[in-house]
Amino acid sequence: MIGIRMIIINRAEHADKFISPSTTPSDMTPSDMKHLMRTDNKGLLSFFDLENKGVAFNHSHIHWKLNRQLYTRAMKAITNSEKTCRMLNDLFNEMMAYWIYLKNPNDNSTIIDAVAWMVRFSNDFISAVVIGDRSFAIEAHYHKLKNHDMSKEMSDSEHVAECITNFVNDNQTIFMPKILRFFPVVRDRVKSLKHTCDFTYNILVEKIRKRRKVIEKTVNSSNFDSKQLGNDLMTYLIIANTPYETGSLKSVDPSLLRPMTDDEVRGPLFDSLLGSDTIANTLSFVLYYISRHPNVKEKLLEEIRTVFKDDMNRPATLDDLNKLRYCEAIIKETTRIRPTAGMISRVTSQPDEIAGYNWPSGVFFNMYVRGINNNPLYWKDPDKFMPERFYGSQNNQKYAFTMFGGGFRMCIGRNLAMLQMKLLLALLYRKVDIELVDMKASLNLRTSATTVCINLPMKVIHKNL
Image (cartoon, rainbow, N blue to C red; front, side, top):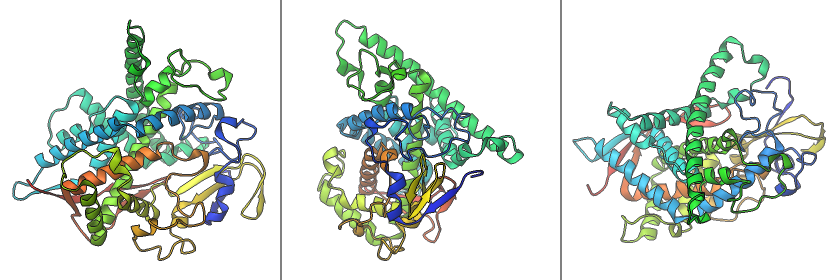
């Protein structure tokens, strides 16, 4: 960062002061939104049309608060729905079918790039249950590997998946000072990222316009019932501040008491797709660490046998979710050692005392998540992969472990993300065995604002074929 003071916080006890404001979101006004913003907005948020859109990068308090309420409402409905689980099961079966098609003819194995497949799976899942309009990235990726012709729908799905990955890989560009935008090296990065955003934005706006027509037709039918509208995020956003809204909004700025524009609806949907890539990378790290620790894999298999008993082919359900405790512990331990979001940032909006020092407004604080997650002050044997540590009482320090951020900027989709990861891991390991192609290989990583896995060659060994 240029022209701004940056303070790195590597002690959990100092993080709460700038991560968590003292007021509740519905009561917050611009004057008391203490340290809520992630940047000073001197970068390129406006250029990428992210400044007052969505939740993740939104720098407008009134827009952020409205989007957060709608997002939270949709996430609650989606996460508690068996329909969500059914879609996950369906997509898993589809992916498994393609892996069988790609099977080595000489044995019961398929070599895959786990990252590429997890990205496509997550993209299709989030598109289906959050956006309410599934994409076809899994199918497109299979046809791409086989050099088959693809329909426009499949081609667009593959391109969107690639665009989201490109954005996550280089999202640090959006925080660069405006003065650097036209510098030779930076210029090409900005141009590439702008294409990524524009293509994805256009696809989403096209979906939004189609959904508006469907909603209009539905509400104008003679036997209209609000239950016909669905519980996906896109629908919640489109019907907000209309006679068809199914819930009330709190403390919305009067200027936003109107139906949302296509671009305003697009913002939270774009955030959702970005979240799908983060989930995919976390899953890839999980597969890597399970492969490197046979004892962990065996305990996971034992839990799967206990939960699913004699019926290893039945669909995974919400009822199974809370029973997969070791599965959740593996995910948390993986994230402790290898978090995808290595930093949590806030900019002080007013003078404050943090870590024993007095700071003016406008100071950029970064909580070093990976350093704290692996600090021996808070964790015994931090370099060891021990999922069992999450069975006992958690560390007394609030931010000694951070997985989904913190405060009111905490990831709204965290429960859905955990649902996806736990159920997918259970489905995978009850159906196939997965091991690294090269057991000595290190993770191939790229780190900017987030840490991503570039590729992960794995061998899928099919059971009972």
